[in-house]
Image (cartoon, rainbow, N blue to C red; front, side):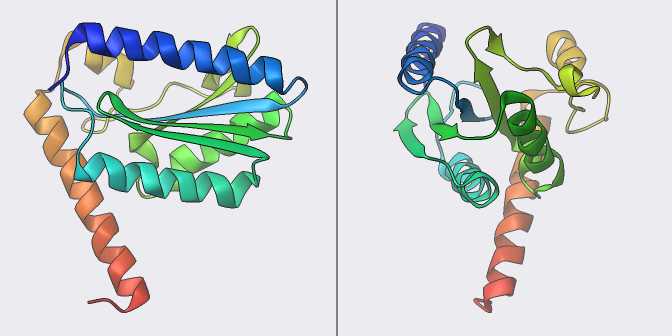
Length: 172
């Protein structure tokens, strides 16, 4: 289990990495991948399944020039330097988040020198809650659903994805 201090320190290091990559690759867009997982355990078998699926989807959709992956106790992180302009990249990132079977568990931010782009910049509403469909941030702040409820839904999504992946390969 990780502490709030660990999470905040990890967030600071991630922001530093983003700043460094933006400086190293001017004129290109930067994607930052994290896995959405409630609670103090940010790295487990299911989070790694989501991370691997996200990396594969991003590589297929973007053909990144540079990829940096970090498997940390505070959660999996991926940094992808892509040639698309920031708005195009955000559109593709949202497509992955909205269409991939595990997309709702992926957070693919497009980072610019002015900060991350939001879905609203594409004219889209906020991401829906996994359980009730209301804006996820509203449910998160109000603690509408228990951590156990969320983890159960996440577990079901990952298990279904794994089963469908195996049946597609014939690994039944």
